[in-house]
Every structure is written in structure tokens, then in C-alpha cells.
Picture 1 (cartoon, one colour):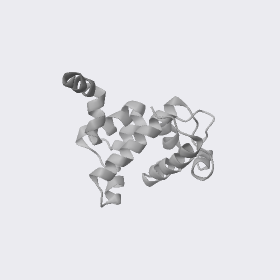
Picture 2 (cartoon, rainbow, N blue to C red):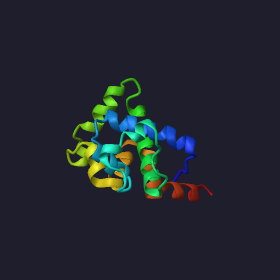
Picture 3 (cartoon, rainbow, N blue to C red):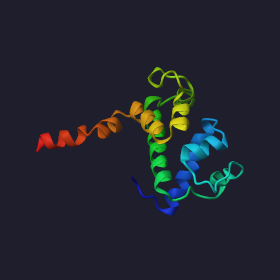
Picture 4 (cartoon, one colour):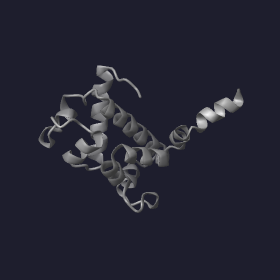
Length: 140
């Protein structure tokens, strides 16, 4: 996973907070989705929008990376319609047993983030299956 500089972390924290707020997540859901430490209370979540960066923990870093890739994939799916990006995340989806992708991400944790990202980004799913390494081995 990617290591972020303090400046990158601060900018990406604001970007991810805006993304989660656009999805109308509650403070508790934001904490769960980001797997923030128990010291972060729901009443203090706005500090990440205004001042602080997310903690530099491996779990948080992975989730930041997943959410950024999900955001990019949604922009690819709906390049001219930002409202549709938010709507897609909130609507029930056959792929997820009629659950909304945001529910999958919040309720299923990291595996839910991976499921949603795999659905949106076939290159991510391809990397997960090991096909990429198989492909490169076949070329050599």
C-alpha cells in the first residue's frame, strides 16, 4: 500500500471526508468505514474535515487507498454526471444481494471495500486473482 507524506495525508483526508459527506454517511459510519482508532469519537469527526489528517495506521492507509480508487472508478463510470456517482453508491445493487454499495462498504469492512472496488475496477479484480503475475510470467 501507498505511504503518504504529511501534506498528501492532509489533502487526501479532506478529499475522503468530502466523499463520505457526499454519500451522507453518519459520523459513526465514517469512523467504521475508515477503521479509525477508538480514541476518535463521533462528535469529533469534523476535525478531519477542518484540521487534522487521518491517523497514519496501516488499516487507515489501506482504506484511504480503496476509497480513492473507488472515487476514481466512479468518475470513470459516470464522467459527466457527478450526481450519478453518489446515487450509484446509495442504490441497491444485484451484485451485492440488493444491498447498496455503501452498506456493503460500511457493514462488511475491508472485504466490503474490496468487493465494491473489484466490481467497479476490473484491473483491481485482475490483480487480486493473480492473473497479472500469471500474464507477465507467460510473456517471459
